[in-house]
Image (tube, rainbow, N blue to C red; front, side, top):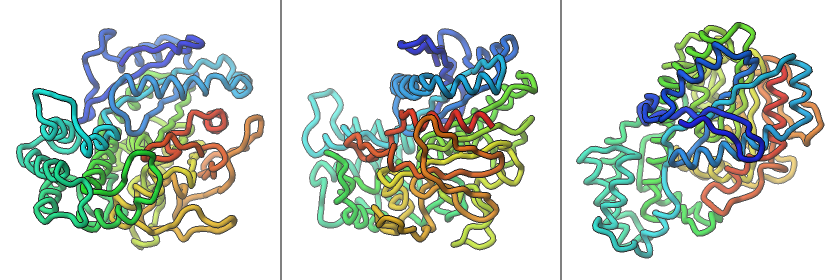
Length: 444
């Protein structure tokens, strides 16, 4: 929502915020941020627009903290910026961060259910019901199911088996969430197997040797995390297809033909930016293609962009129209890292098919690509894509990206540091080397 200046160097960026339905929020004291952006494009000699979307986060303050880190590292790459100035005389970027409500779960609140809550006028169960109703489905039926789940967790957070009444509560909650189970080519959020809470519970127990610090992947709440995970994928798509697509078309209409557009997404934010490009059901029409896209540790299907999914012959990935309609005129760059346990473990588990691929792989070993796997674990795959696989490069080394190709950057050397949370190195992206890839893609 605010126009933000980085504390270190006064670099300015615009933060535009959408609600859960994809509507731009109207509570900014500076007015509608979309109009502010249009005014800048209409009246200032902007040469390049960089639009960025975060993944799972909570509030505006969290988004600001993340964008401050990302953008701060990016604008520190002086060698890349000097090259941009040579390539783009008069280089003047407009930086835009998208905020959307995207917190699928909270580490602290889920840990605390096994200990205690501070004294409050509202019971611990009702606190959690309120929080998760907002994230998943705020109906009386959903609240009743959540109440049953959290009450059972208060009694035993890690039962030997999932109680029958809790299984039924999960099925009710899944129905209320209104996310489908339509298979690998479906829209993000519905691209999973039929929901089976008992299988998820058992698979999560098997995966729980993964070190997530003090956070347990397993236990009675494992199916809740999976529903939340898939609900946020669904929300990311809807926000991109609605408010995000409207913002892009408005910017393209306001900007001169010489202005170039560059997209970067992280995690679920890769769904947001892909949905912005595709428009509703992939049928949106842009005034002109965008110039580059960088998808960092994407929590979307590795088959999203291809024309024919191996395990679903004749069916294309949901975002294939981006390729078919040539909506990106320059390179599409992805990053993938074996140290990203959020995508490597949570993604297939959420789809109902955990244990497809074991990490780490032996040196030189290529995985058999799974039916359900995340782009942040495998890169972008499938037919009709001109794919280049290579390592993420150090600074001062040129990628020599080419237009029309997809570059899958193996990023284990740089996206590797765990923050001790559920995601492993999923959020370890405020790296100069990641920013260097973004700049290089924008130079084409």
